[in-house]
Length: 341
Image 1 (cartoon, rainbow, N blue to C red):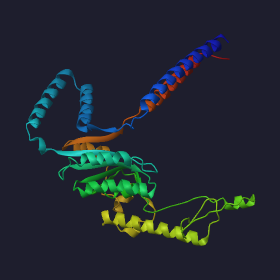
Image 2 (cartoon, rainbow, N blue to C red; image 1 turned 120 degrees about the vertical axis):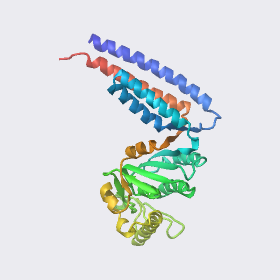
Image 3 (cartoon, helix red, strand yellow; image 1 turned 90 degrees about the horizontal axis):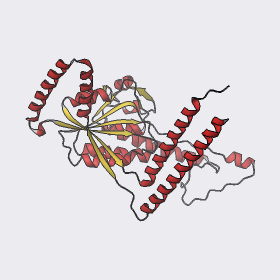
């Protein structure tokens, strides 16, 4: 019982202190935020060649003895000195972007800034590599994301799309813009189709004598509804809209990948990378790691990431979350050290 009393006192004091600090910080954040614009983000650039070099050097340090490692470092320094004497523009550049897509393609907001930045410097001698992962989502959202990638093609800069896990539906709509599509053997690709679904509880409402009225101006302002009674005419119009969207989707893919037999692949089906290669949905089977490691031996590879600056309130929230998790972990650690019958 003494342990529980000590533990309860410790927990109450800690929580009180944390809450007091958070209240003060929140008040400061609120005062500073008044009249201020939302903080902008910034472009973060890292050179992947240095990352790969660091991995190799750490492995060499663990494998070789002191004398061999010293001789190796001397030889490497000599080769690097020779490389620096070459013309700075003689080495190609590769700009690497990431797109992890949700249903609303929220990552488009960062992608647009990254593309705007790289197009100020990129030339047809360079290359853009997009590491793409998306199962698709809203038509208009992925339409905008695809339009951002089209800017790269329009600028004449080669675009390579790497897919390690999935690029389906709206994800494949983005992928097909690449001049070259590289897929891992078991990545999921395809789903060139359109789907829409919604529940209808009109019968349930009628059962409980609840009326629901839908008033519209325009014959097809509302085709299907969740609460109202759907009509056959409304269903036909809704299906017609889906068919039009599907036709546009097929036309878009066929434009960027004319080698496809579009009617054979635009069935809404998905294929693993190996089968997708036979269907010409992709051009090569390889992971993005393998491809970028190869490119790093031939070019300067830069990873671009546009990161939005977090407001003080957001930073306080993250700090609070981390503090609570830390305290919970400490409390559990203390509790787990006790033995009970």
